[in-house]
Length: 138
Image 1 (cartoon, rainbow, N blue to C red):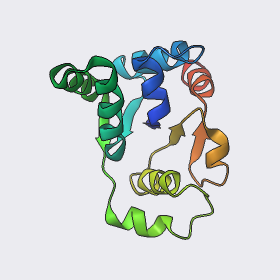
Image 2 (cartoon, rainbow, N blue to C red; image 1 turned 90 degrees about the vertical axis):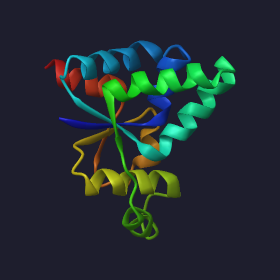
Image 3 (spheres, rainbow, N blue to C red; image 1 turned 180 degrees about the horizontal axis):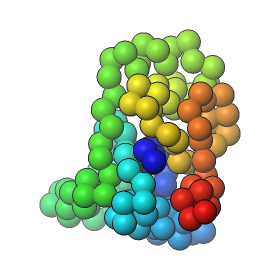
């Protein structure tokens, strides 16, 4: 199952944000055990770096975090066509619309996010971390 992990889920683990971190950590474990093929949007990588660097204050440590993420999750490129196709999207937030278009182009099975309401008009299945965990454990 090809799963695109939204930035908020990644950051939940990196910043140990409760009560969300436990389910997010289980998704990392599922990726490590190859129960899912995990992806993160390439456009999210710089955001993750920035948020990590604000905590570590170290370029080296922040890059090490990214390196570990890339062992679990493959970066999913955003193409120009994704940006164009997102313009007429019924998804109100343009950034989310671009993410959905990238997922559609790459035939991603689902997007995992805590912000499901933002993707309510998505044509790709959108699951919460808990819903994904139930699905892969059934």
